[in-house]
Image 1 (tube, rainbow, N blue to C red):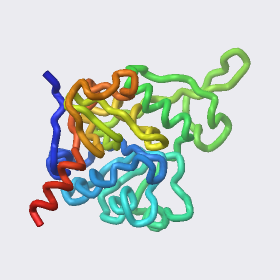
Image 2: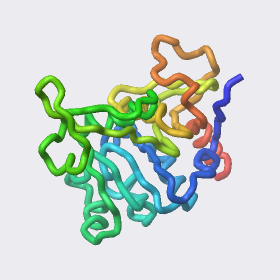
Image 3: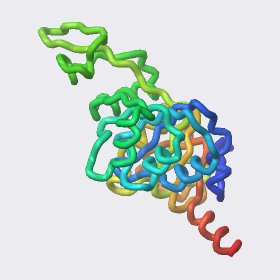
Length: 231
C-alpha cells in the first residue's frame, strides 16, 4: 500500500511545515517552479525559512512572493541576481536576508549527495575564489579540491507533470531540473502535478522519481475542479 498522500487542496499539502525549516524548492527560473505550493506556504505562515533553489526568485511570483512576505531568513542558490530578481536584491541590500552562493553543479551534487547518503565529497569547482574560503582543501593527483558537504532539506517543494497514486512521477521537458534530486534529499517531499492517474497507468520506463521518495501530491486538476464547484 502506498504511503503517498493525495491532496486536492494546497493548504493540506503544505500543512505542518515549521518555522525555521530548510525548504528545497525546485525550478530553473520559472520552469518547474511549484508556484501553487509556494503560494500555499505563504498563506500557511511558516517563517524564518532557509530556501535552497537554483535562483532567488523572478518578478513578483513564486519565490519572490515568499521573500516579499518576509518569510525567508537565508537563500542558498546559484543565481541570486537576474534582470527580474529585484525583490531579493532589495532585501539583500537592506540586510534582511542572508545569502550563500553555490556553483550550480556543486548545488546539484550537494543535494544529490544528501539523497545518496554521501557524507561529503571533494570538488575542484571554486578553488581559489571567495566561494571556497575556509573550506578543507586537498591536492589529489596534482589537482586542488575543496571538501563540500551535502545539503539536506526538511521539506522539498517540487513540480512534476503527472503523478500516480503510488507517488511515481514523470516530468515535462525542461521542468525536469532540480526536482528529481531534491525529492531524494528531504525528510518530506511535496509535489504539485497537473493530474494524478491510477497506479500502473504510467509507463515504468518513463518514471523519473519513484514513489518511495514522495510523501504528498497536490492534484492541481482536482484542486481547480473544487474551486470551480465552490464558486
